[in-house]
Image 1 (cartoon, rainbow, N blue to C red):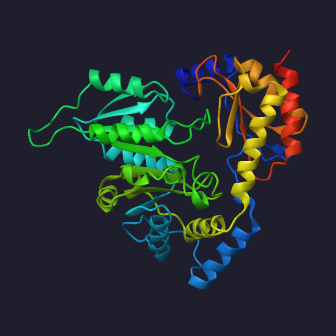
Image 2: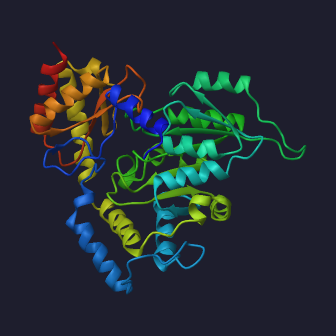
Image 3: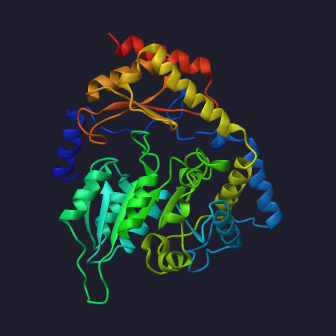
Length: 385
């Protein structure tokens, strides 16, 4: 029997119409997945992965252990070298997931006496890592450098020893997963350079979407060398699994020694790493990024012609959100769209703040313009009454 206080928490979720349930695969028109380029179902990538494993003679199902024991098979070395080259980084360290990467980094790098300032809408995995850190942390208003500057005037790192001053770490994302918006990254870089602060940027939803060959928004802006650490993940546009932390060789060596989510877990199996390599190979020769960009432009144009623009958070990424206040109301509209054949997920409080519930549209290279026009036309009939 579940403890009563846990049952009460579940009952509270049900009462607020916010209970989470696992869904099942469907045949609806996809406006909900993070598979922005269709790579997750690419037969080319599937076949290339198989061929790579056969050529390498890697006919094994698992890594056999952590990377520090028996799990650091040859593909790790090759892929980390490839990732360093593609992303113009001194070093790359692969983690089992974006969640593992963020928890590992933020629980181990900031030290007692340091401070972390993070965007109020930062991903849950970063928040969890920060909670495990010995550093003090403070949030700043979303994408607001002025508020960040004011916060820094109010809080200072505390030196533990006279010759070891406390450091300041500033954390944001290049594309926010629940809003789809983008901070002024060049201003963040300039701000951190001026103050000698360490800047960390999560590129989960920019990888594969922005930059040459999907290298990310920081590389598109040519500021990747100004950032202390970048987290790029493979479970969105790359269509596979895992993540990489990009930075200096010294940072990589530190994480190998102190990031517990790296040290104490079984490594990725060869098949997962081969899929990452195949996805990157496909990315460099794919037209899907241009198709996605074209759909993003068409979606924003259609928002204007349907009168929906003011209901959406401004976005030039693959993520677009229509604010519909109230869990019950947003779920009702999502259900109505589902009945018309469209898979758009309602994002409920407490995942987002109360009153900021929304429909989250994820655009893909394989969505047709007819599908975009139809779904937004239907949405307009539901929300513009």
